[in-house]
Amino acid sequence: MVSTPAANYDIKDLGLAEIGQKRIAWAGREMPVLAQIRERFAREQPLRGKRLSACLHVTAETGNLALTLQAGGADVVLCASNPLSTQDDVAAALVTAGIPVYAIKGEDERTYYRHIGAALDHQPHLTMDDGCDLVATIHKERRALIPTVIGGTEETTTGVIRLRAMAAEGALEFPVLAVNEADTKHLFDNRYGTGQSTLDGIIRATNVLLAGKTVVVCGYGWCGRGVASRARGLGAHVVVTEVDSIRALEAVMDGYQVMPLLQAAAAGDIFITVTGDVNVIDEAHLKVMKDGAILCNSGHFNDEINIPALERLAVGRSRIRDFVEEFRIADGRSLYLLGDGRLINLAAAEGHPASVMDMSFANQALGAEYMVNQAGTLAKQVYVIPREIDREIARLKLLSMGVQIDTLTAEQAAYLNSWKTGT
Ligand SMILES: NC(=O)c1ccc[n+]([C@@H]2O[C@H](COP(=O)([O-])OP(=O)(O)OC[C@H]3O[C@@H](n4cnc5c(N)ncnc54)[C@H](O)[C@@H]3O)[C@@H](O)[C@H]2O)c1
Image 1: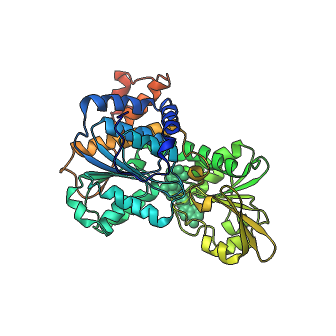
Image 2: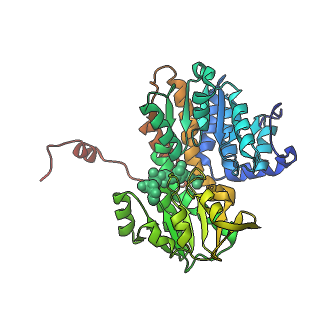
């Protein structure tokens, strides 16, 4: 780590740095692909002289990414991509490593946006987003920064959806790489990472036994598949709700019960939204839920559960324990909302395990390098990470796990490329 601390920052407590350093190192043990990239970056300096503003969940895994980008020569500034996901010890450790961080766990919305502003004051050549906040703020409020930006990278499904909407309207002013679209990202991070860590968040917040409970998973995308399979693994009876017929069919054939949410609402003990959509759990659902039902979200924004409706229905509310709030409804029922409806895996637990973030952040680091190498050649569009990068990350991950695979023989390669052979 660089030993000169950053001059400007806004974090909870610099005194937490030593704990943060240990946690970053612990996560780093499970991030061998990123470690290899870091070694190469340190030698080759592909990001030398580039100012990079990152808006990511400030976790131990992100700490490893930030240090990798710094090793590659980037001048990195980091702010949080969610008010509740910051690990204050990691923020402190990065500041001591010379990276300005603007992030405090539990910061209010004004502070959150002030921190995004501070990250943009860095006048980035590269943006790195998890949810499109930097890119959206540049386009809405800080347009003078646009000429400086070479391009950006985007971590999550919701961010990519927002970017595609911007590009379709012709509003996007620089190219952005959709890291989420890489197979080595969403197949593992969204599915196994969100699957495990969402249940980890629910369990840490509540200590409920999942065996025998009815868990309703709203959305059967990459995250929903992971959450449903892990909940089933813990003995829950899992019900899936969907709006997409293909995804719903997949859930049925994977062995889950599928039904409209209004029907599931009356049966569920625990509700988990992972859709990227708004007001998925709405007033009508809240009205029929059982006394004691637990509600949480693992999608990007805290608008998947209609919290204003929950507040309107409630005659009283109280914080029962960390990340658990009781809403007492006029008819005598109590509903429990976890983590203010924010991503429960990051609010109440530690986010995704390092082993999957290894691949997600390898994509981010190589994506930033790709953007620099392609500077000036890309259109103002959303790009998918090149297939060679994706495959190389998978190859390195397998290597680090000691797993070997077969290679095509010359005969097989010719066969698979031919239309003339066959029956
Ligand atoms: N918690 C985390 O750490 C984490 C990690 C990765 C992604 N995310 C976020 O999770 C969300 C889901 O991501 P994904 O990759 O699974 O997306 P996805 O597009 O693969 O899946 C979303 C699914 O939700 C369904 N859906 C939409 N509206 C619905 C509704 N009203 N009711 C039921 N189903 C509905 C869609 O049909 C789709 O199948 C996004 O907001 C993403 O940014 C969170």
